[in-house]
Image 1 (cartoon, rainbow, N blue to C red):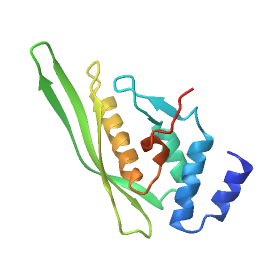
Image 2: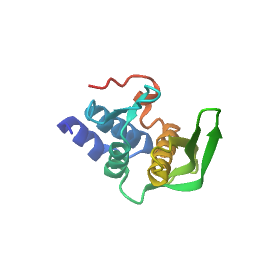
Image 3: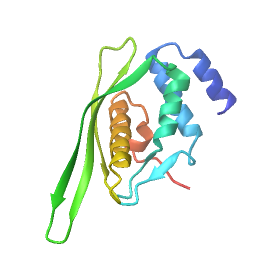
Length: 146
């Protein structure tokens, strides 16, 4: 974290300033905080980096999420059956009435349902936070993995 980012975090008072500080923290962490989905080729922020940035700037308890639903769905083709974990998550930031919902998904590989549910949940958290423009560089296609 740069000294300029530390100062930006310390001076952030409004929600808008805090969102900018979260995005600056994420930007400072590039490319080490970027993941590439091997299946789709999409890039995004690694979930723990996003959660850590939110906790640093907003503080634990001043933001959070609620899982609205989750399920495992299977799809049968002539050749194979594949399964997906799907999660619906609502995020909130204290003092804001807007609580956007995001959906996420993750493939079940090697029968690991727990890992797929976790992946779907963090995918949904990232998508829901994007409604506040948090992590927006990922959704603008600006991330470059090392």
